[in-house]
Image (tube, rainbow, N blue to C red; front, side):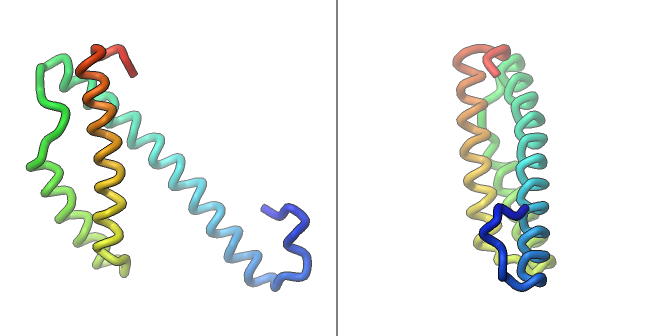
Length: 105
């Protein structure tokens, strides 16, 4: 997306930035879908009296995503930090749902 300040920049730079903008939009949409799913999990856990977090699953996910990162040429440490950030937010949602009832989100 150009905003008038891109004049004079190389076309290749603009093309690459356009790709980055599209990827950023896709990431936001994917995160929104992911959180819809994890909120459904939080409601189910609250209904079933299960704890908001599942450390065993979190460990397995970290290992799986680190391996995927390595296969994709992404720094696995970064991937783990990114996942930890997301999981912390998911757990916060699950705790909120558990405290306020399955209809809270």
